[in-house]
Image 1 (cartoon, rainbow, N blue to C red):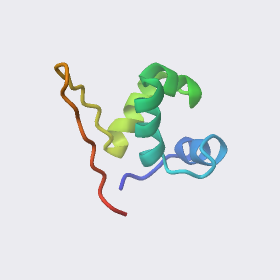
Image 2 (image 1 turned 45 degrees about the horizontal axis):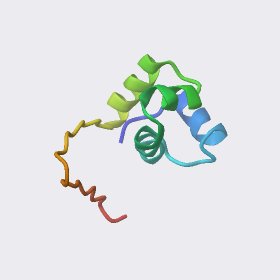
Image 3 (image 1 turned 120 degrees about the horizontal axis):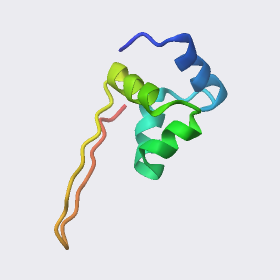
Image 4 (image 1 turned 180 degrees about the horizontal axis):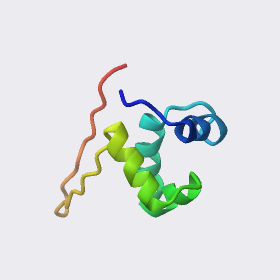
Length: 77
């Protein structure tokens, strides 16, 4: 696990009600996209991109043909 900066900890506390960035950022990205996630967290897109790199959060883009589906499996906690 990456060491979090003071700003990361502050965002977790103030904006995410204690939720971990590692969980909240991917959910937000899937729900509202990259730019809106940065705006909601009051970060620049560059800072959000750096945090994702530091925290090991990957973004993958997938194209699906009509009728195809994708399933996301999360490791059990």
